Length: 76
Image (cartoon, rainbow, N blue to C red):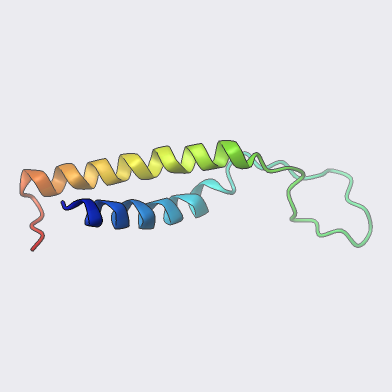
């Protein structure tokens, strides 16, 4: 895999992983005020979500690089 291809694979994997990681560990407010949006989370730990997403996307990118390097999948 070329460095440019690796970058774009990581970027795409990062966005997909972000949407997979966002709902994990969300706690909702038990006492919502009238007029509040009930599905809104009480608090989101953005720093933790960022690092989880980056780690997961890095693992996916590394796995894909290994598959390509082993010759299972050929990239022209």
